[in-house]
Image 1 (cartoon, rainbow, N blue to C red):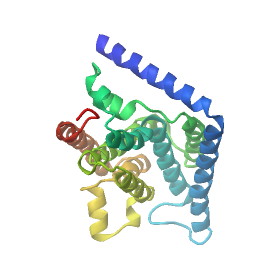
Image 2: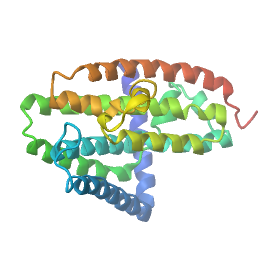
Image 3: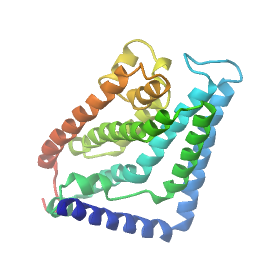
Image 4: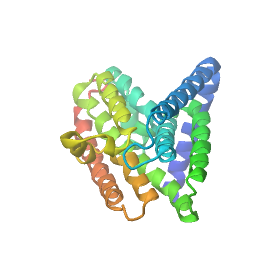
Length: 263
């Protein structure tokens, strides 16, 4: 119990520091909010354009696909809020050898490595996507059980996305230059923003198993729309554990690859 309180206190300080920094640069805060809003509008707008020409895409109608897009936007926004800034900071800290204090702190070093920096400006976008999720859920006449499962499914999707990207980010310890690694993450994010039935053949199999980014949104929502489609969700849960151990194993090797500023 004392350990949990210790980590919560550390995280409270992370939040306070990130908030103070974000509010110190108000124009940057405003610009991020505007960019996030345009991204939200353009993503949903693309679906409206598509459905002006067709009635359904695969097995889903317009409201189902819009709910899926809002679900994925919510995953993006929560990850941007809590995790994403740390991937970019890791890139610069590695090149400059600034991780010495991460290793010296009396906490598990993966905690400050991936949770120290928050993107507070994403709070507005989080609220917007949650409102849209509720709106499209009402249009789909969700039952009480579906509403109850939605936060848990969102957490599972966020967990798998974050673990996959942490594993990818740790490759920076072998490449040193992390910018290219971060752009790989962004490309995989763009792939995952469409349901799995859009893709075919070998690419689909690889994106459901080896680098399972298609499971992030498709597995929870296939189950949410039809409780009999639970197999993909079971695979998502298994892969969360798999990637958790992958990240831990990679981190053990990454620590030996790190060259500090005093090296």
